[in-house]
Length: 327
Image 1 (cartoon, rainbow, N blue to C red):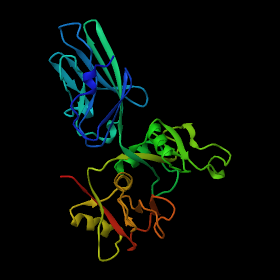
Image 2 (image 1 turned 135 degrees about the horizontal axis):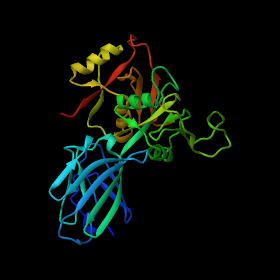
Image 3 (image 1 turned 90 degrees about the horizontal axis):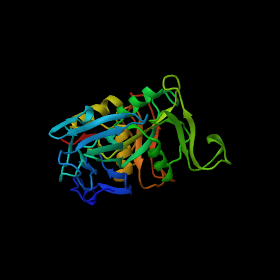
Image 4 (image 1 turned 135 degrees about the vertical axis):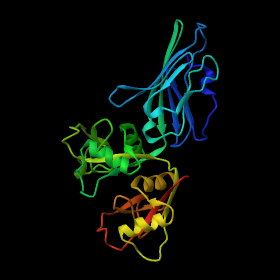
């Protein structure tokens, strides 16, 4: 059984939420940038020789990536987790892991293995980030990304390739998108809430349509990206006149910021309720605007990030959205 103390540990972020699913699996919800705890521990000690503890992260292909190993005074952290993780060690039975400055790539399932003499225990912790899924295709148009291109495209927009669970969660809140996109497990899917002929058939049920696993090198689709809460300020930069793309980039720089990315506008719209009816340049050369309060001439029927397109970068027809990272 999971020790009661492990569910009552010090919480480092006010947004953290812990949910016990069963005695060997826990779900933790957090925001990007948080310092969070992943609970794990024994009820009692069967040996005075100390605990052997191993934390790993279970990847999408079911392989495991080492996070931290502890044997007595010996402790080692690995890869991207170096200098970002440590054991809380509230008492001799505690194997709780602390992850600092939570990043987009940190979400997923972690496994704690703890051994003390003849006693051992395995706990899995699902770490979920509060965020938003958005569909993405490049300037070249629909269905131009293989899996590696899709990963790069999401990273360029301050996001990562979404998981099935993340897309499913977005579908449950009403996401409807007829273009198929990569997910991080190598499958290609798309969410439909309003069945219709061009999107799998009018007589089919609502849900996630799937093409199954595709060839990551040769198959080409769009991608569903996932981004989380902002670690800076997203805003529309008021200017006396409309700008071309290069002027938009320079305007943000002069304001001590950078031109915003697609992930920034979606996070501001979905997580902060940002609403602006002015079309503005973004870093990928697209023009978009976020509407949280549907109204005439902006987005009359739904809250959405409206997509104008990828205009000629020389056109002086738009404003610009900027992003100022936290110092």
